[in-house]
Image 1 (cartoon, helix red, strand yellow):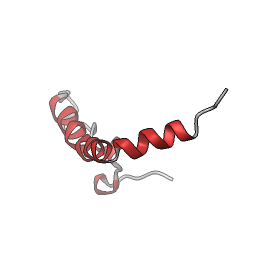
Image 2: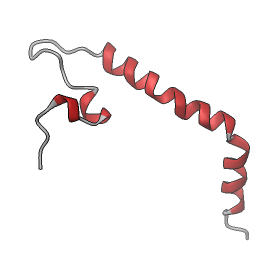
Image 3: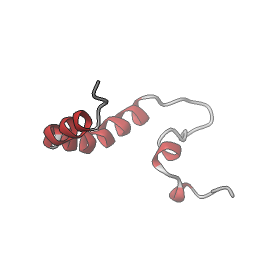
Amino acid sequence: MSITSEELFTPPVGIPTPLSNYTVDYVTPMTVNAIASIPVIIAFILFEKQIVQGISFTGIKG
């Protein structure tokens, strides 16, 4: 199955889709990816203690 409509592209496919066949735009995909990573960074900062406790709880004891 292939998607031909740009409106249905997922972010990893749609972000780097070039706007023109003759130029390469590096700024827009990097900017969009940086903005898209902000919620993940905020979630990590808010739940850092629980994440670290969960990782250390499941660690191998020896």
